[in-house]
Image (cartoon, rainbow, N blue to C red; front, side):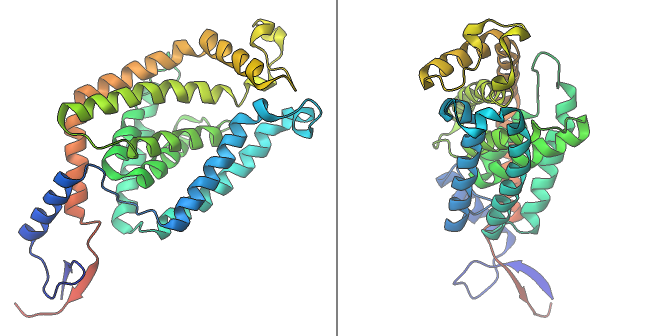
Length: 300
């Protein structure tokens, strides 16, 4: 008994050469393969998860001065620290229901481990975090669903390696998941144009990640903590005012970490991006993620 990959509607198993040719034609015609197929139900779950994430990050701009969330703002990180992992577990289950087979799980585990292994080399040192090249290139080469899973699981795994488990971890997971998701949703491009596109996206995503992560603790700081009142969160203030204060806070505090993170990721994308993309796409073709597995019995 042999195990072969057969496309729907065929009556004979494909040979390795035929399947390789089929994979090559698909790769040439589309630069956005999808290892994790996202079903309609999974899309809804992704949207709900992102909505919860936006609420977790953006509540300082929406809550009124008399709202309970402001009155108990010190409890907010713990509330979302419990809520976000549950929602992420739901969405990962939904994504898996759309086509995450054993080969996809294995590839996801390898890349998540790679991201976790790379984070200690730069974590805490002026923002240099080489793990982001894994998330960005993995999402770009293998699809938005895979990028979402890779970002969240890779960040969780890296937190276990570095001991960075705390109320900030769920925020890091959802933000990293968005980075991988966005990489998978980039428009089609080839050659140097694709590398330039990924590099530009990496720069924006790395800075945006740092700005977003400031939101989990910025509302809890007081003006006496070493920054001016013009950068402090004001409960019940107009959205424009708090947005202005938050941007000033980010520019004066975290930008020194965000820019090195972006510079390192862009450099790694330019230097290693072409080879890594080729390797990931070749692995995707040879694994035959799109071909259903059929058992055929025949004699030699």
